[in-house]
Image 1 (cartoon, helix red, strand yellow):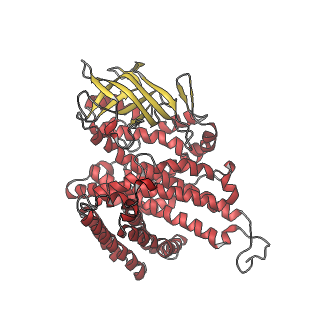
Image 2: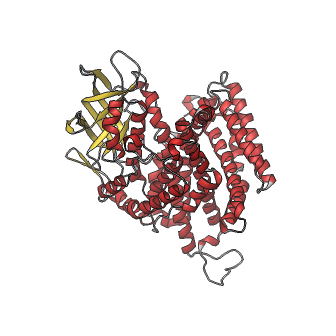
Image 3: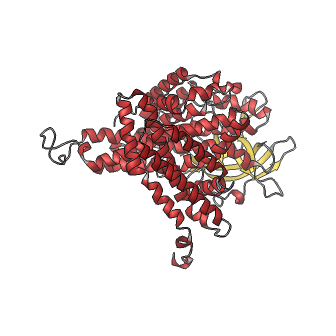
Length: 585
């Protein structure tokens, strides 16, 4: 299996030419003092090196060995602890963290690209740092000054890890039914009792402490509150003390991500500290969840990039069959890259991956403006974050599995055996469609809250901005621009149809949400491809610009029509789904 190589030229192109990161960063003083384009390029070079030389080598062995649970300890595969130590020492856990508490203060617009490299190299390993970064973000946004000062420096340094503890056996996506209890103590802390399941990074041997963010209910209330619960108690000077009643009941035996510790966690009177206000735990948690949902979408994106590289290399090396019309070299067998169906599969992966990267950078940009901007620019970015986050999570992770399975098909029989590594990608990325809210739930959030929740205001604003930019492009085919614009118009029309029916046809949003999200994703990808093609055209004679023209033509011709299909499905409504009696299932 060839080593992973980050697509650095693609990443720099998006930052510099497509989304004008230097201008965005210059407009945000808290970011401008930390990074410029030259610094970003140097950081990406180092992230590529670490992903390729440090993280990728433990991917296969970690999958083969897996996590073990012995004598109440969770043990990660050989090499993980050493690699994590080097990764943390490099500051990568706190990459986007608050500099006041030891973070590097880097923009999310750059962070998404660093995350993609790490996920391409090893999904399981990257989850540990991702959960820690998300937990630290939540503490920084909602925790008291005391909690921030005590916990954040050790989390940003990677010496302590973080975990998000929500799900219980009887309460998956519907958290109203959680049973974990929080009883007030005389000293202002709380005693946490209960169990959680499916807790990624719930315990491991990579760090000396794990800081859990636990959802629990206070006495005599149905509301949900959020608590910081350390595995090991921490005294007022920040020193570790005794165990805190936080134990692992078992580890989950999963289809994939075998080197990522997914735990059943038990809390037996564990001491915890309230984060935010009582009964407002979900509000606090969703600060973390927005970033985590994007991170999981990027897990799918990283898988897509890795899958493309592996399948493309294989297609150039694997000799099988002869090109239509005879071998161009006169050989008795040609590399399978000459075959139309193999090219179709590779192009499908590539155009979805490169447009997906554009989506991740745009979403990261809006998160930066929402966090550091001011006035109407900040307000608009918050609206766009709400719109783009569920799409980033669902569309990127759905396409990530599609890419892995398609790459497996390029390998043929060799894709079904462990030695090639493709089957691991399929197993590892499958969960991304499920956790942090299944993709169906993301779609319902998107259509029900973000699109029709404000009667299309945010969607209309976003589409109008895209349309204005689309009209300004001067180096792309006018017919292709018209195709994308027509689908943007139809997207608004179909959204309005749903909005008009949402109160009379109560099941329409739930039944049609996935198709609407997929339609939006495919249209926006068409828009991204025209943006990229136009931006690349400045260097008209380069291979890079030529590739972008070919790929843009392929997407608009072969992939964009999928948006029309999904919009047609939404137009048909919910009756064919909902009218079938339950007894017929």
